[in-house]
Length: 301
Length: 299
Image 1 (cartoon, each protein chain N blue to C red):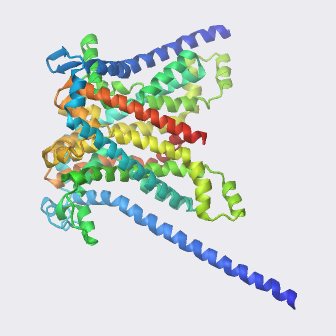
Image 2: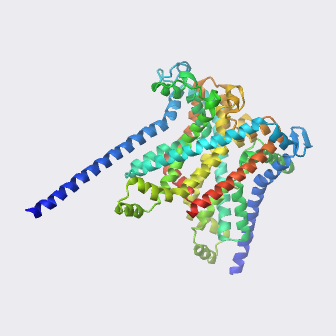
Image 3: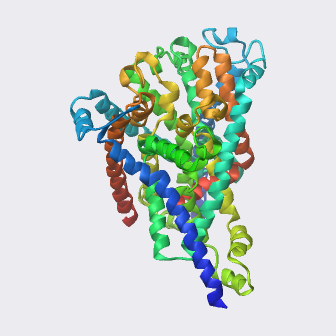
């Protein structure tokens, strides 16, 4: 009886696994292979010719815009990650001091709202807030403090920072929720023991909270970094051709995902775009591996 | 005498230090409350600003400096935006994100169930195969993926471009969902499944009547997360939905604003309409959403 029942179970199981494999292969792994394959071709609509390493040669030696895009992408991540982690941690520590569950929930919900709302729409809202002159809300508020207006999205030195501010605003609440969960998982006994030893709040923070929260901090750093590296929507919505160039004034916000999309799809340079994607893929694997090592290190701690 | 004064003195001292500590705690707590309240106001200003703008007249929106409350309160912007195909965009969005959610729930729970409860080396390999895929930047294989849909369209004769099915295709096996449901399946007692098996239940019956009810909370969390994220999807629909009547609300919004970039009344109204459904869902289900996201991080 048992064998009768186990046989179909295995068969159904194998079919489910086959189904999963087929979709994963067809929708992700095969397209990735094809991307690498195309990167060796001159491929435009109607043209498909083998080109050897010509795409890569052009990419590495004759394309300053690609390098600018790569540099901008890294700068973006470097701005966003500390901002999200710092603000999220600060908010979590503040909210965690509140004993009343209702009030704590209220603050959590309000800070988390920005993370849930669609980025496409909220990026448009921020584009409206960033309007130059005294028309934009941000400049109006800065005027109260005597700061002269900034042409946020229209000048190259502020455009990328403007996008970073939006992303920090949006993701800080997410980091906060994760940190709150991490803080609540720290056993109360540790703090009580520290109280008995007469440790002040700063020492308690440094010697109990930080070490025990490190895995969560590492997790948030990894998630935020990957998100920042793949940012696309903000550029597409906020600085499509602001200031005359694509991807912001003087390519200041020409993030990698946007640049690849533009090259391969909007402009139809499919082979060259694939070469870019291949290089970006390798960089992302390297970044991912670095982050994996980083997480491993913090967990061993 | 001395025996009485001594304890009184120390008692007094403790009292004083206790008062100081309580005072300090009160100050700290007030400070935290004030800072957090100020912080939440700052966090909410963008929402306030766009909602207020959507109720202003076009003339008022051009005034410098902008007004904090509409001088003339109008709802005239809403019908204009709604009539501009936004109703259709919403329908598309709900079919796209709702359909993806339903399919992801079925496939994730099935695959997670098989990987955990019919564990085999093959299952483990496929699990890592799926998980590794979630690390790959979507934009790098976007174009070949589109090409794959064209290929399926050509070989099987199933229309893919400009169809809901084509939009949902890449998410049928959703790595994050498989990951979440695999975690959930570890919590399902195997004894219970064996008991059902001895009672003569079929495998589908066990999955449907025993397993799914046990993991329904995880399913609910997954459903909300998938729906919210797919509603916000821009990059993929931008490529696969090329006809205006197939645009989900994200693509529709960007295209619409592209036409009316200077007309802030239409622009802000369209943004408010796009945010509204997610905002309502969030208000109703906030506890589950936050819990779902928080536990996702703990794994």
